[in-house]
Image (cartoon, rainbow over all chains, first blue to last red; front, side, top):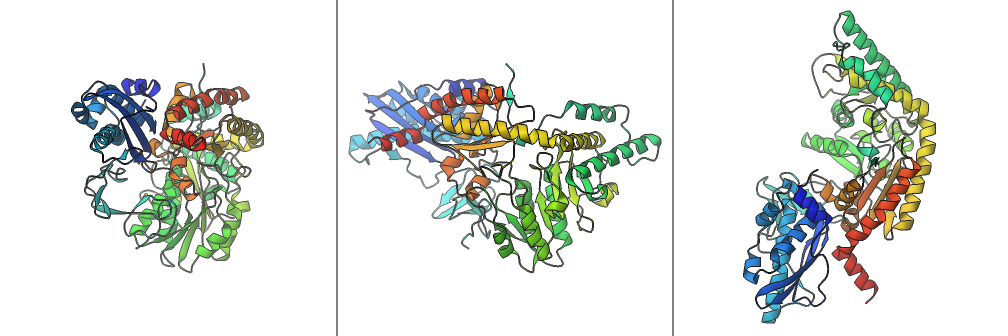
Length: 193
Length: 393
């Protein structure tokens, strides 16, 4: 089995699955190109998370991470919940395979996005329908296909620092290709030079 | 409860006769097939008998069959070996966009040596249009490679016609028949292929045994240099047990193919019909009629492949998927993308590939356990929630 017992438990019996109709904050992260999408709903009482629910489209790790994040968050103050990190989630789950660690980033990100959405609403600045995660200069996209490391956005460029590769998105299928390739390795479409 | 193994495309169980044939060569008949002593000569004879049998499966003569350790190696030998042998004439190779990664990535390596790759597109059913191959051919083209059947969507390609087009232009034609050979009739002369790859673990032979057919006169530069095993095309001590196993499996496949195809086709259609009926928002991928007899592949909307596989596995059903999460590179199947399937739907890829021993009861068990898995995963899918909201505003 590729996953630990704890991951499989949360995958099979995910806690806190669902939609909070009267949520105080909603956070969406991920996209289908990377493979996982998560929506977190939070209900706030005082400065604590009274309830957290989630929905996840994704693999076993993504589902287990969402479940674990929801369990860790309920009852915490907002500030405490903002300190839940991907490595804490992965550790609580008894570890994740290396190429699935990005799933744990998504889980914590989705929770934080929901809390940020709540805080923006309180401040009167939120957009309707919940916050998308705001890219923070160095937002992590999908993993580099060569080294599994993060792909960094620098202005309009998408690069992997470790491999020193710049990527271009295929206009047809959206997949990442090494800059300079003539055709997309995945769909064969011609790439812009 | 016995598990139901529906992952033929990842590998078939070796037939008991195959294992029996191999065992002596793992034990007392261990000698090196290149040795002059009688033990060595016995091993060599066994290798040559296996070569005859594999040749018989694909209508070739024995001296046109070269053993390799995997289908990937056979594809690499064909791509790199034939391209390099033709480099004086030109540096362009033509492939379909849905070739196996051992073909596509071999072509990428060739690009580093100055070769240029033209990828021919496929339609929504995964079919290559031979006219597109013709358009892609230039005077500099030294190789065309299009697979016989696709292992992810089951579609059979019009390889005979593509071979004819290549031949008319004087360009050697290779076909990756790993998913097809031993499962459907594959005859190198009927196809008109100059080179063809096949692997034993796709037709109830062992892993570690595969072969490349090279029509007499087809030139390749070897990838592995050394002794003169395999006519100098592939050095290295012969894996005698695996080769013997492949030979026995080829013999059985040739004898039982018609019966296998009939059984598998009817069970495949039972699975396809039953699944599409029981699971809404699901679709068959690949060509519905012109497909591998053991292959049933789907995209299930709103949910992801790995999660489906884990649940199926816990219920004793082994299958596979082309979702990004199931691949180590976290890339969604290039085959589905090339067919125009969007990323979200491609994540819901699921492939059931049947064995010769698959029973109607096995299919019915899949049809029983699968719909509740879909329901469970959809209940927690934000995409499904969104879909329901948009349906009933």
